[in-house]
Amino acid sequence: MEARYAKPVSRPTSPPMVLHRIVVALYAVLSVAALGRSSYQILTKFDEAPLAYGLSGLAAVVYVIATVAVALSARRTLRIVAFWTVCFELAGVLGIGTVSLIRPELFPEATVWSHFGAGYVFIPLVLPVVGLWWLSKGRTNS
Image 1 (cartoon, helix red, strand yellow):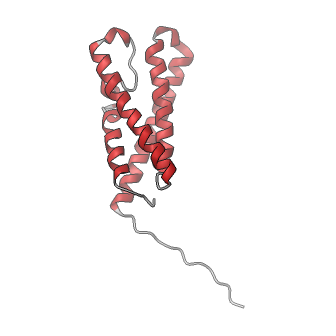
Image 2: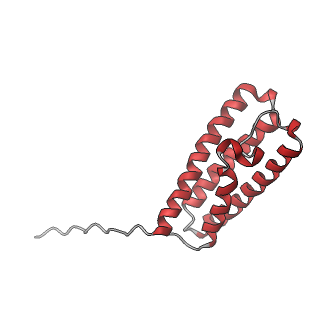
Image 3: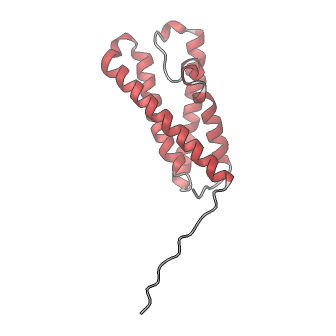
């Protein structure tokens, strides 16, 4: 009796799949960075800038949810979660970015979203736009 083995299936890496992986990787990096920074801030010096550090914690949670939802956005439910999470992220970056410029005394310490993400090379400002564009393109199979 001859053994039958499945032949490995090689999927071509198309540009949309590569872009999806890059977007997910950027979200993962921001998740780790925001989670690490906010955890340290909240645990060691929350009383110095509670609003700023609380918003950093919120941003970290948003990035973790966005990472998972965008990564699994081929599933309809997670695509909807990704869309609303990324919309919330964009609103946060624009809102906190604006307030941090108009009323800097409210933010004695920087947050991920203050000054439109300047402390993170403006990736927090650009990434939700790219994420929404990606989500508007339809399903992904990566």
